[in-house]
Length: 611
Ligand code: M6R
Image (cartoon, rainbow, N blue to C red):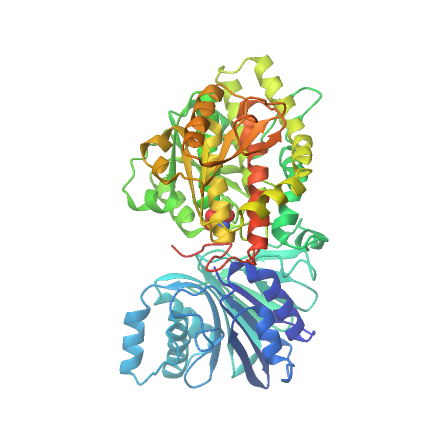
């Protein structure tokens, strides 16, 4: 979390930095700051959003061709002006922005304290900038060496950019665990936590690897390891387009991303499905497919919404490919001494490709000898670079903190994988294989139809926007969707919501049901339809308010529920892709009506790069 930007070149740095911070604000929005180096360093920072920073510095001079900026998601120290980045060292020599956590900062702080250093903030980052200065002054080394030596003493994660007052035409950047991308222009360089602030200036980028240091002067970039071994920069071309990171006429990124789903799902299967032959080809798995086909067990790991997609994956792989699946929270998996065998296939799911726990979990699985695959959205992010193979979701940049189109793209990839593996393991006949492929291509059109229900869902939101609790129920493939619906509502509207397997309701949550409790039931036509009708009766008997998502033409549930949302029929295996759409819209409208910031919900960040 936290977003960092840097610029060195011939332009005025301020507009590049402030616009970059706006693009990165989804990573954290507790405070923001900018430092420019124009003979003398000038630092502007304040608690609040990037717009607050803009207002704060409006009347101040802001010139300089070298600068850095930061938008913070607080870890050490509450969000306030002093804890905001950039941080300056005690004697004013160094200014630093940092994304990550310095785990041994207490010990380093104490040592620096013994040498006369005092600290203004409660942050770990201020300790690092002072450590750099201490080494610089005591060791009489240059700025770059001071940074490298300091980083050798640091435990934890960092993406940093550093400026030195004595070497004003230079930026020093380094990473370990937190992402950092360098944009390479003509006689100018851009740095950022992801490529979104860079793409409008250049498409040539270098993704920094762990323990890499980049020393950038006007017109020159030198890449090396922390141990001073020179490296050849690997310049890659971004495929992202600037239009993809604008709101495109929608009021919020979240709404835009919900409405983009027909296209993002299509983009996810496009090029992988041959419709004429009704076959599938997953290029990123080609070389590892025999191992997946032979797998005794699949372990899927992820966090939040990606974990929910993983749960759908469990149903898919067990159902279509008959492989036993375990779905794990990355944070629990990595610390549990899990039993991983060489024949296991581990699939890490992550929109950002940077989630710290998921990244640590795949490293553990790799060490244990498992085949590790990734399903990620951000091209070039850490997880795809550390896995043995994988499939990108091609959902395009997801800026809203609440995950929407990433979820459906992840489920699309998992479905394609399960169908492919199922056919290769002979658990699907040719006919079934082709039928599934054919039906998947129909999903975008069916979602278009559901999106037309937006105004109906808006009315529903008006009715229930003021309640304090919501319950979401689903069975089978729709149980993970119930969890996802509840997560969407709570994270953006701050209404307490719980998702449950519908049959579990009787084992506790039923006690909560009264005439104040809206219960969203996912009840499309599948093999457990009769069972879910019984669950609806149970809710009704306790006077709960039933909002049912049903298949088009359903009359049974329509007669029982207070409200029904009809969605097109599809193969059961694809039902999560359709059923989740009304839940996303319901959460969005309720949150807007409650005056919440849907794109940047409180306390959250898009990319959780701390554990
Ligand atoms: O980038 P990742 O998919 O690894 O992120 C995992 C979670 O942090 C993320 O899905 C989170 O739960 C979303 N805000 C939910 O909408």
